[in-house]
Image (cartoon, rainbow, N blue to C red; front, side, top):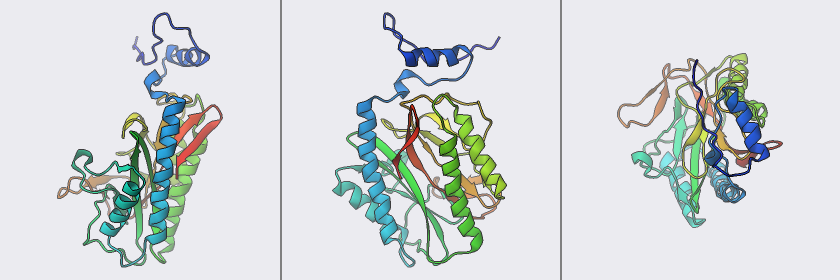
Length: 284
């Protein structure tokens, strides 16, 4: 018989709470459950929420300033200066050697595009700007798509459907549901619209570290993956491709993820906290 993972442990002598009972019930049935450490305290959630206010402000500024003829290093400068002016730190800068304060991913670049003075935005481009903010040790993470001027109907649809995928994923996430419910809903919506979902990258737990458990995949089966428990904080960030879901990493910089067929990709991301009632958005 396959032994299941014992993640949820109640310290000896501690009174069982209603939450403990509920989670232990699922764990005893063989489901993957979070550790107690993944359940954020009200103070931690408040800290992440404050970080999220700055993170949202960064992307609002980018939305106001982004235009054709701008290079992506200028976007990076806006992100860096706004974040520092608000007493926070851009988490991307120096993360595992990443050289910039945000990711700028244009057209066929799925994610982790490195801002550069050589990369000039042109009419018709679609670009994802992904920012993570650290304030007082708390992380908040979000990304948005921007359409530069007027683009093709196909690219417009891709950007819209990617946002809808985030929304259907959000609706599918319920307290004491499963991570797989999110992926199932996202993949179904993408496929219905003739698009594919990137499988090699996923959303993640966040808050006291940049990347925590669980992995939030944007494909999968309902009722699988980790149990979603109130107090968990995580991102949903579907990457939706116009063609194949397959991707490769640019060997020159070791970061930039590109679609295998070099057709466009789009992504939206929020950070959420799971509550007793469902998800609350912490970063837009």
